[in-house]
Image (cartoon, rainbow, N blue to C red):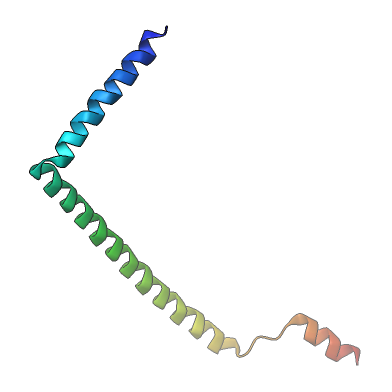
Length: 83
């Protein structure tokens, strides 16, 4: 029998029990609520930054398209020259 694996298994059960006890306590619940709140605020902040970045890139693409006018496919140019 490998005692190292048995020790790891026993330690896992002890830590799991301690985590469960902490999660069921009032202090643990408040900690988890705060943690989830921070996660939600972080997600909203990243979504806001991504949206403003997308808007800026859309503006750049629109200005670039205005410079050259409508795009013409090289296939269309070759077909016109063949006729």
